[in-house]
Length: 330
Image (spheres, helix red, strand yellow):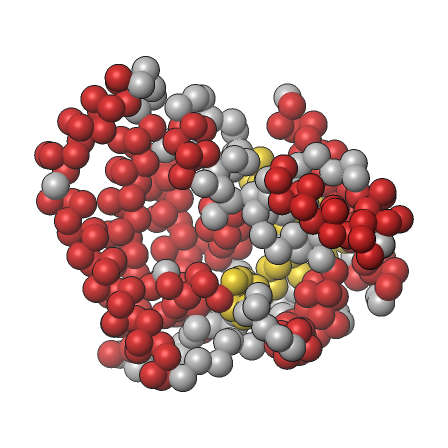
């Protein structure tokens, strides 16, 4: 299910986001001779000789032009009558995510290693992925649409519709942009079951069960809330060091809509700490950790339903946390 948005709502959002993106990209580009010496000097004065501010702004320029190119290509699909062509829009998504990953490599030095690609197979799976930064969605989108060549259906927060490419192309293919403030969660869960029903060969559905980017402060706060209503579960999950406690309802709804789909558990390292501007600058000031994206497939016959599914997901998340912690410690 694609989030239902009126034409007026989309137009109101896009008349702000697209011109703002264009103006910001042009301004940042034409002022390169002005800001490059300044940020290089700032980095040098702060003894940041890996020049994190300069590299981050360089990626910002690349991102802006790639976004504008994506919007132009999506407009061309509309002009040529292919706006509703899922295959064409997924090819555009593959180009967009692949080009952004190349830009990350050129400016920031990200060179991801993919492990378990054979587990993707022909798709027909629900992907349960850890979440540590905004780059998570880009990384997995690149893996599935550009490397594996299949069509991912995403569960994303509605706020991401202010990214023009996600807004335009993301609403043309099966995705659901979740309203995290919804008064009636049953509406959102029904939408996820409908999204799950679109999964089959050549596609996967991707959800981040943690619901938000992981960091120690959020982990402690969420465990406190769990302890208030389910002390036993809070004790069981208190050993988490890297991941947040998973939320089972959304994943369960996706699987209910896709009764033949397997489960792909996905974790990654290398983007930890990149959830704030300060965190990004700090990480870029040092040699980057290797970026790994690892997948493991579980047959549907091994996945319980109902209440046992929540316990199963907790156990898998504890196992994933130990693996991620060990990888990051190394």
